Image 1 (cartoon, helix red, strand yellow):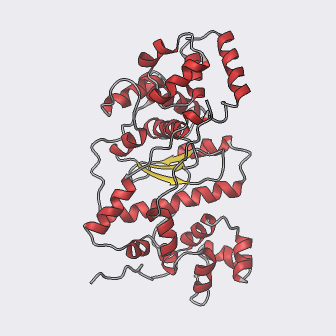
Image 2 (cartoon, rainbow, N blue to C red):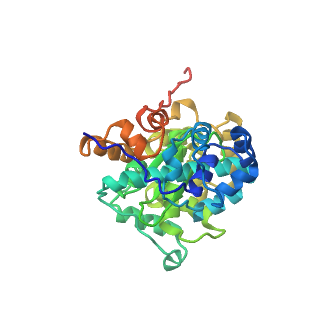
Length: 364
């Protein structure tokens, strides 16, 4: 018989209380009102000055929709990573409350991954390299080429960026950020593989570019600095569209020609046009004309429907869950208890197939 999963209740963990509240997008005031207590009491509980008393626990669990075990997990919260620090600084129009909630949601998934890796290993055939930009003379493109070589990626387009990242042990979680301003977050923490928290509401091209951008952060950036976002963009461009392979195809291109290249390179029209400009295959006049056409047709913000393709679905987390079910004989309910989730939320996160993008083709 399977032994029920329970967290040792040696005392509530004030860090898990703040994590639960922030992951639900609630302020201390909102939580206090919902619990019919003072904000001061909430603040003291989150600071570790007061315990979560037994009489409050059921109501707290109900309001925040976490089982009581969530608040007794012994873990510590993690802070912002280098890429998040500068990424958030650039997103001044995003409300602080939303950023806090996304950060907390990432941290909850990080705890889930820790639980899964306690019972199963990744056995990735590759690893994420770490390169010092200064040792490459500041040549980010050369680092992108080095990563492709380290991962034995053949010349030309990368057919599946998600699979490449997972083969190197990267763990990708999909999340609906409910915002156009955040594409993804990446973080590398001690004892855990690189984690990517990606916006699942992106089209396939933008998802691939954003994931490549975050791979660049993991490979190059151990410490934050002001140039890191631009460097990650240059990494993604060379990683997805190596100059040696694509430059000859970009001479004198038209919008129609770029459209024929999208299915092959699996990047957006905008990415191809910008790559042409960066590689010097178009004059300034030609670039300006093409960008005006892109704006006229609305392609700078949304790809033509016939060029859309779904995001590349990650599989590594599903494999870890399958290993727990088939090799360790866990049930979905016991995995939910292990993750300190209610069964319904666990099912929505990990058991329910995500609705895939439906392509709509325009009349010819």
